[in-house]
Length: 336
Image 1 (spheres, helix red, strand yellow):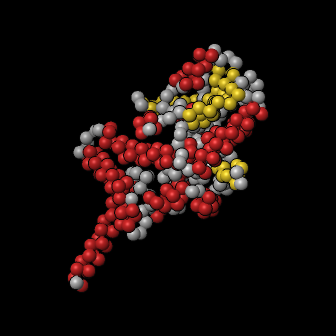
Image 2 (cartoon, helix red, strand yellow):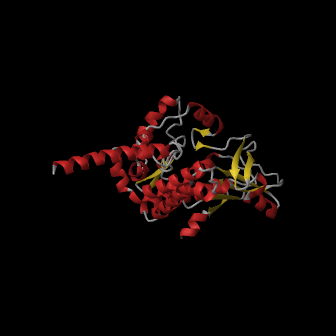
Image 3 (cartoon, helix red, strand yellow):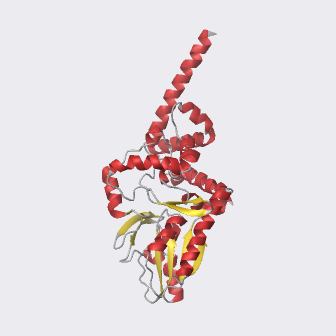
């Protein structure tokens, strides 16, 4: 009996050691496997300085800054985008501006050239200029706040708030790292419902004095961001790793398989885009399913509704006609 117990004990220890090694090996190249180290992640000083210079906004979290440009990888190669002097994506169509758009990456139109955005095509149809203030990874809450502070042309008649269905999660996020593991620079403002009314919580690093302020912001985010417990802690590997693995057996097993397959293909220099993208595709699918489930939460739906109503109220106050545009991602459509 003692022998069996001893063997079982050492087998558990060995399994724990091996599992920790596997997690740390895959984690180096895959931010969606999180451990204790991700509670207070290390901020690369150079990367953070670059973020502050190119994207940081003390009110909104991040933004496309006026008179800047960038390069992103599109389906058929790199694309370059340009932001004009007012912060709108470049649109060479001339004429009176009657429509202004705010929203996320589906409004900004990532992965296509400036001349291929739906705002440009709409400009051609209308014979006037449509402005594009979309920002990648925005929630409807940030887009609303952007609209509230942004001066629009006096000729503006319609303002569009465009977003993907996943915004129901984004509007509840205070630090995106808890919702999208590894997105550590993305602190943002947030609304909550208090006595049925919207309460505005400012960006936790809105008065950033340096990296030394980050730890305090993280401590505060843990208490305010529901995804810290419901998602981040749920999927986080921490001692004992074996228990965390078993509690999320299906997710972790599939990810380990997909990551191992990717490593094997890479070792033998076999190029296969499906294999290379499979781990992230799994995460994307899980995230979209998670956001769909969130529409079953009365609190989440009420919060989003209040934000959209506030957008409409702001538009009417400024003499604009509001239009809410929901743009499903391909995965949304596939799993409906």
